[in-house]
Amino acid sequence: MVCDVCSWHDMGPLMRLETTLTGDRYLSILSDHLHSFMSIVHSDRLGQFQQDNATPHASRVATKWLQEHSSDFRHFHWPPKSPEMNIIEDIRDALLHAVEKRSPPPRTPMDLLTALQDSLCEFSPRYLQTPVESMPRCSTSLLCARGGSKRY
Image (cartoon, rainbow, N blue to C red; front, side, top):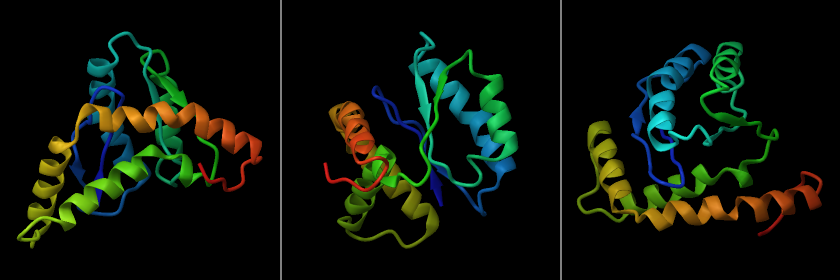
């Protein structure tokens, strides 16, 4: 499994997870990677952090850490079961599609991670900005649908 972070400005590092993601492992990702990424990319402290409601993300330890760091960046509280609003999914799909086109295909987990990282470097900054710009429209559509599925 790969964990990633992105913003309007840039994509953060891809992190390869060797085992199942737990609340404690997620906490270490937050403290080791997210905090430094947010402080560099959003030094004005106006950045917003968004995550889905996966069990490790909603764990007590992760929730507590996010509350303790609320002065460093804002945490966007995500509605449950709204994967169509998660821009990371679109980025992951594009990455996987780019990797599938590679020849020869990756054969080992490290080859796959390298191919994902290389493909990510080939994305233009505008590629990241488009889904971020779509968030107000998507949020409005979700509210109009009262949380139900909606085509955009």
